[in-house]
Length: 387
Ligand SMILES: Cc1cc2nc3c(=O)[nH]c(=O)nc-3n(C[C@H](O)[C@H](O)[C@H](O)COP(=O)(O)OP(=O)(O)OC[C@H]3O[C@@H](n4cnc5c(N)ncnc54)[C@H](O)[C@@H]3O)c2cc1C
Image 1 (cartoon, helix red, strand yellow):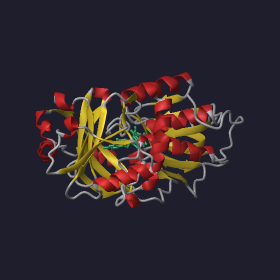
Image 2: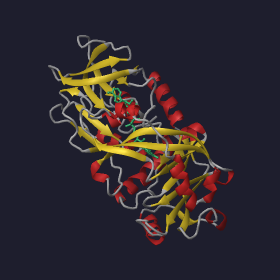
Image 3: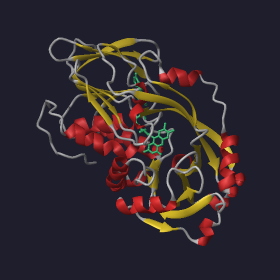
């Protein structure tokens, strides 16, 4: 549609998990009848929402950020309730504490779990035997899950089409500009290079790594972002590790998590998963930077180091790597916290930028949206998100 025909209630840019859920929220909870979701890939949830570690966080990962731990504890049960078909619970999850170079000791970790009421049990001898005792101080059984991003994508596509939300795939939004009469214009370019514009009362920028790449009147985010090119190795775990998820805390260590959408495990290592990083700025297109990158895997180095702590990993078979740009708030570099960021742009007050940080933070974003007095074409139907 062109800017001259009747405007949309909202244009949502970015068809990842956040854009998809926000588009549905606007249609269902805010009564927006004309919503358009714009996505540059060929399908929904192809970028960070697929290329990640698939952990439904339950707080354990954040002993240095109480707020993130606390929000995870609240959001995990909601996520399991709302997306049960996409959550894998039937595996054993272990957190192990390294003896050296760890920012947390086993006793501190136990205390932290008590303070956040997170379930924790010492692992039995057979599970402890997987670890090298000279390097690992203690091993705990915890309650933490994995999500299946392909199932989330199928859910999103189904619900969006049932809701009558228009989806424009293989289409890139390039500029966001103010028009007369409180409308915003989003300029688009499709895969064939054809350009068009959409007029809307609101624009939601849910583009994760691409948040600051818009021209026009878009002012950029006030919050400083850091971009990191990451590699998660996909491995076929050996039988001893097949039914396990393992995280060694908290420092230059590793995680091995089930990756349900490929029936494999991801292996990530604090030293080798980040390949390089830069401070986000307009004009450095993160997607272009990643596609120009030579993507030489560091899986050998990951396995060599992980094997010192957990020798069974030498029996793993490397299958593939997921490369992605990970976007985090610069201010959380030291505490590893993952708060959301939600900005209504001062110079463009009907335009919002949203970054979730992790998948279960969707509830924190929806709470922020609930508090926004968006002038809806009809009265809000319900106050909370429901499927
Ligand atoms: C390596 C890694 C590991 C992670 N591990 C976990 C984990 O274990 N657990 C967890 O909860 N979270 C994890 N995360 C974070 C999680 O992946 C993100 O919080 C979440 O996926 C963000 O969803 P999103 O919809 O904002 O982003 P995305 O899924 O990236 O969606 C943004 C979409 O915008 C599109 N887009 C960008 N620019 C434009 C444009 N100009 N026009 C049109 N479309 C555009 C992109 O193609 C993309 O589809 C991890 C992230 C990474 C990278």
